[in-house]
Amino acid sequence: MKTFSKVSLLAGLVIASHSFAATEVNAKLGQNLKIMQDILQSSLGGQEHSSIGRVQHSYLYGQGVAFRVDSNSGWLRHFVMPPMPPVAPAAPGAAVAVSANIANSISISENGNSFSFNFDEEAMDAMVESAEAWAEQIQDQNEKLRDLREERRDIERDLRDYEREKRDIEFSSKVSKLDADQQKKLKEINQKSEQLKTKLADLQKTLSAEEALYNKQKAEQEKLAKQRQIELVTKVGQVFSTTLCDYGASLRDLKEQEFVSFQLSLSGRDNARDHYWVVKKSDINQCVTGKIDAPALLKKASYYQY
Image (cartoon, rainbow, N blue to C red; front, side, top):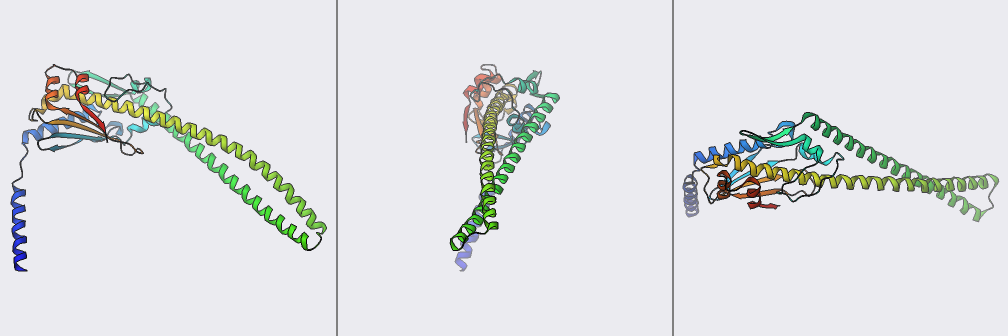
C-alpha cells in the first residue's frame, strides 16, 4: 500500500513538472492573432443587427491559427425566409454577383484601411418584414391544415357513431320486427351518414390541395434557403481572403510554414455542415506583397465542409 502511494506521488510530480514546462506562445504572436481577430470581426460587419456572431480564435502550436464564427443568430433568417428572386448557384470561393435584394442590403467596399459589410437599414428592414410575412404565411397555412385535419377527425368520429347505432338497430331487426320509431331512426342515420360521407370526400379534396400548396411552399423555402446559404458562404470566403491580403502583414510573428484557417459555423440549421478555409501563411505573404490578389489567394485555399 505504501509502495503504491509512493508511485502515485512520483507520477504526480512527473506530470506536474511536465505541465509547468509547457511551451510558452510568443506574446507578440498572441497580439498578432488578437488584432487579426478584431479585423475579421470588423470585416464581417461586427455584431451589428446580430447578423454575425463573435469571431473567436485558437492557436495550434506548429500548425497555425484557427478563427471561428457562428452565423446562427439573425443572418440566415434574412436569407432563408423572404421569397426573393433566385440567383444562379456558384461554388463557394468563386466570385459571384448576388441577387439585387442582397446587393442592396450588403455590399463590400474598400475605403482606405476599411473593408467591411455595409448594411442598408431600409433594405435590411424590408428583408426582415418579408421574412416575417413569409413566416406568418407558413404559420397560417399550418393552422389551416390543422383545422382541416381536426374537422376530418370529427366527421370520421360521427360516422363511426352512426355506424354503431345502425348495427344496433339492424341487430334488433333480427330479433323482432322494427317499430315505426326504429325505422325512422334507421332512415335518419342512413341519410346523415351519406351526408357526412359526401362532406368528408369534399373535405379530403380541400385538405389534399392545401397539403400540396404547403409542400410547394416548403420546397420553395428550402430552395431559397440553399441559395442564400451559398451566397453567404461565398461572401464570407471573399471577405476572409481579402482581409488576409489587406491586413495579413499583421500576422508577422506567424511562421511561414503555419496556416490560417477560418470556420463558418451554420449551427441552428438542420443537417448543416460547417465551412472551412485553410490558407498557407506563405500564400498570404504573396498576397500582401502583391504577387497574387485576393481571388487567387482564395483559389489557393483548401476549402471543405464538415
